[in-house]
Length: 68
Image (cartoon, rainbow, N blue to C red):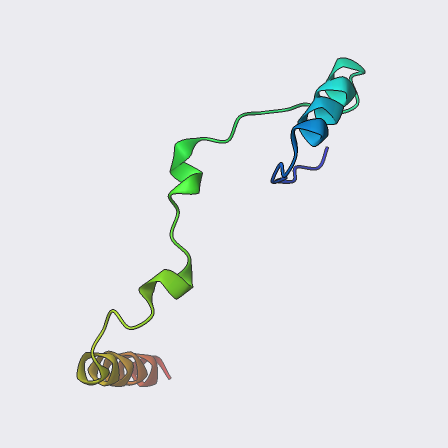
Protein backbone atom coordinates (compact mmCIF):
# COMPACT_ATOMS: atom_id res chain seq x y z
CA UNK A 1 0.00 0.00 0.00
CA UNK A 2 1.20 3.51 -0.79
CA UNK A 3 0.28 6.67 1.12
CA UNK A 4 -0.02 10.09 -0.50
CA UNK A 5 -1.33 13.49 0.55
CA UNK A 6 -3.88 15.24 -1.64
CA UNK A 7 -5.05 18.83 -1.37
CA UNK A 8 -8.72 19.03 -2.34
CA UNK A 9 -9.26 22.05 -4.57
CA UNK A 10 -12.86 21.40 -5.52
CA UNK A 11 -15.87 19.74 -3.87
CA UNK A 12 -16.34 17.55 -6.95
CA UNK A 13 -12.90 16.07 -6.34
CA UNK A 14 -13.91 15.17 -2.80
CA UNK A 15 -17.05 13.46 -4.11
CA UNK A 16 -14.94 11.42 -6.53
CA UNK A 17 -12.58 10.36 -3.77
CA UNK A 18 -15.52 9.31 -1.61
CA UNK A 19 -16.86 7.20 -4.49
CA UNK A 20 -13.44 5.56 -4.87
CA UNK A 21 -13.51 4.77 -1.17
CA UNK A 22 -16.98 3.21 -1.49
CA UNK A 23 -15.58 0.99 -4.25
CA UNK A 24 -12.77 -0.07 -1.86
CA UNK A 25 -10.13 1.36 -4.19
CA UNK A 26 -8.77 3.91 -1.74
CA UNK A 27 -8.92 4.53 1.99
CA UNK A 28 -9.38 8.07 3.23
CA UNK A 29 -7.79 9.00 6.53
CA UNK A 30 -8.15 12.34 8.20
CA UNK A 31 -4.95 14.34 8.57
CA UNK A 32 -4.18 15.34 12.12
CA UNK A 33 -3.71 18.97 13.03
CA UNK A 34 -0.20 18.20 14.25
CA UNK A 35 1.09 17.62 10.74
CA UNK A 36 -0.58 20.79 9.48
CA UNK A 37 1.27 22.83 12.06
CA UNK A 38 4.63 21.29 11.12
CA UNK A 39 7.05 24.03 10.22
CA UNK A 40 9.06 24.04 7.03
CA UNK A 41 12.77 24.90 7.05
CA UNK A 42 11.95 28.13 5.23
CA UNK A 43 9.87 29.22 8.25
CA UNK A 44 13.12 29.57 10.20
CA UNK A 45 14.90 31.74 7.64
CA UNK A 46 16.35 34.84 9.29
CA UNK A 47 15.63 33.72 12.85
CA UNK A 48 19.35 33.80 13.76
CA UNK A 49 21.46 36.89 13.49
CA UNK A 50 24.46 36.74 11.15
CA UNK A 51 26.79 36.68 14.16
CA UNK A 52 24.91 33.84 15.88
CA UNK A 53 24.75 31.88 12.62
CA UNK A 54 28.48 32.25 12.06
CA UNK A 55 29.24 31.18 15.62
CA UNK A 56 27.00 28.15 15.24
CA UNK A 57 28.66 27.13 11.97
CA UNK A 58 32.13 27.49 13.52
CA UNK A 59 31.05 25.36 16.48
CA UNK A 60 29.72 22.69 14.14
CA UNK A 61 32.93 22.70 12.07
CA UNK A 62 35.03 22.42 15.22
CA UNK A 63 32.92 19.54 16.48
CA UNK A 64 33.19 17.70 13.16
CA UNK A 65 36.96 18.19 13.05
CA UNK A 66 37.27 16.64 16.50
CA UNK A 67 35.81 13.42 15.11
CA UNK A 68 38.24 13.24 12.17
